[in-house]
Amino acid sequence: MSLIKMDARTFAQYDQSIQQLGERAEASPAAETPDQASIRVWHRCGGCGKKQEFMNSGRFRVNANGNNVDVWLIYRCKKCKHSWNLTIYERTRPSKIPHELFEAFQENDAETALAYGRSVEFLRKNRAEF
Image (tube, rainbow, N blue to C red; front, side):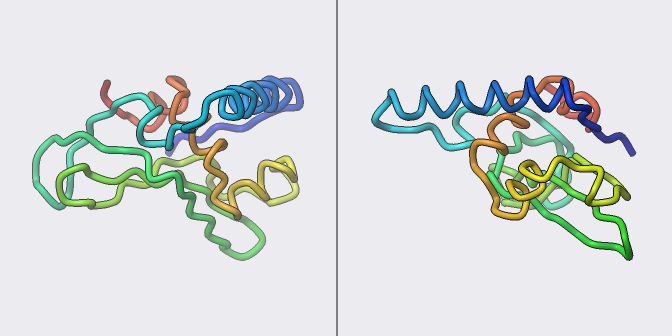
């Protein structure tokens, strides 16, 4: 499976984009939800049995496996709500994930979900179709 690892420079760029998103959200009275602002993606749905549009749920799944964690962003089928987990980190030590980012995953931070939902590189690594 593919995953995205962030070095200090990448995390600084990510952090800057999150701040810009926050500034835009404060400037606009109605903030966008992750599914409204994310890139539209299609994937074969296990529930429907055919290719469907999936939407960003704005939620993460963090699963501990011994000393390692897996982190996924959850997308849902627009038709039947079947879930599709997009891999962010796989079999990674929590100490290797920036602390602020790891907390954002655990708190289901909407801005973080939105940033990943807008990342073409992240979506491509998870074989999403546009």
